[in-house]
Length: 147
Image 1 (tube, one colour):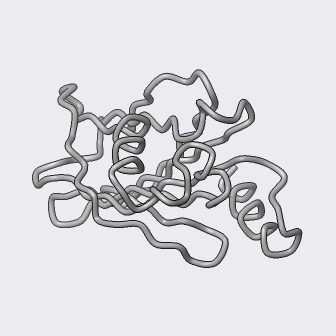
Image 2 (cartoon, rainbow, N blue to C red):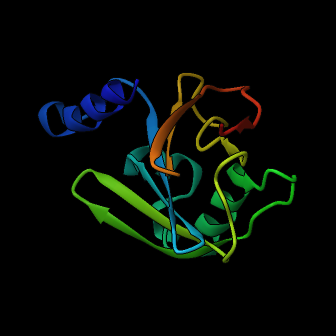
C-alpha cells in the first residue's frame, strides 16, 4: 500500500493532478520523543483549510482534531507543532511529542481529509524498536494500535 502512495505522489508531477486522495504520516521514535511528518497534496489540503490560512491556527487546529496519538495506557499525547513546508507538489506537516513517549502499544488515529473525500487513503508508517509497521486508514476507520 505504501507503494501506491509513493506512486500517487509521483504522479502529480507527471499528470498535473492526482488520481486518488492520499496522505502519508511517518512516526519515528527519537530520544524519547516521537517525530511526526505528514505528507499531503496542497490542493487536497486547501479543501479543509483554505490556502491563505494554511500556515496559521486554522491548520494547526484541523491537524490536532484529525491526527491523534495515545500511549498504550490510553493517555492522549500532546503533539507540538514544528512547522509546515511545501516541497514541490507536497505539503509536509511536522509535529513532535513531549518526552517519554513510546510507540509500542500506542494508538494512532489518522483521519486527515476523511471529512472531505470519500476515497481518502491515509497511511501511517511507524519506526520504533528496530522495526517498521504500516497502518492503513480509510474513511470511517477508528483508531488503531501499534504492535
